[in-house]
Image (cartoon, rainbow, N blue to C red; front, side, top):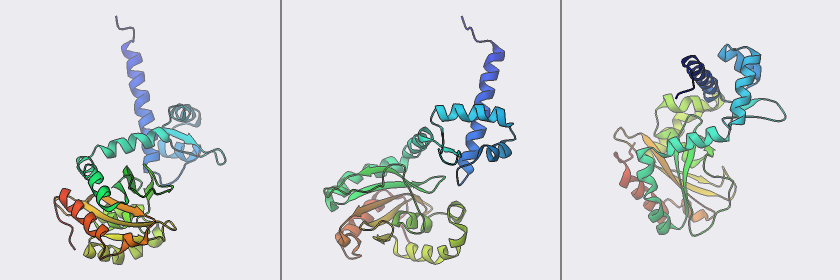
Length: 248
């Protein structure tokens, strides 16, 4: 016998709807929010909102920063987002080529997609030469200064990338975007992370837009040699799973 009444069920569903409306506020925000800011954006009273925030923190969907008291998306929200991104067909097909690419080149490979917060690492394939870095699954890479981000910038619609750029730096994006599109790849020579070198290329759909980006990283500066074997192997691997060959 079902012991849950229809009215209780409706209240439960309503609570889920309210919790989702709170989470949407955080998904759209570019920084942690105070209780007052969340209240202003949801139209909820402070007492009611505090109950929902506490529950979401307890479930890992949100976290509260100790010093400022501000709220932000939590570890389970991040894990949920990464899982959703990683189930993209392009991601799965591209992930399948990473072991062979790594065996051929020797460098570590990472696979990223463009999420709501920016270019996000969703797969990681270690190379023969172990790289010690703070990068990992869920890391969001900047669009202007990382090789991965620059490829997304060049091979994604402005409507997707412009909101992710710092307002004071948006004027520099067009020239960078044109250069990366023409050459079909991007490199980072230890500027983004000192001592770490990276090359990145897009996996494109039939509209020649980046569905994913494959990046090779190493402490060896020879990785970024434009005439070296790593770049040619990377581009060939990405073209293998792309529906449109990257072009300017």
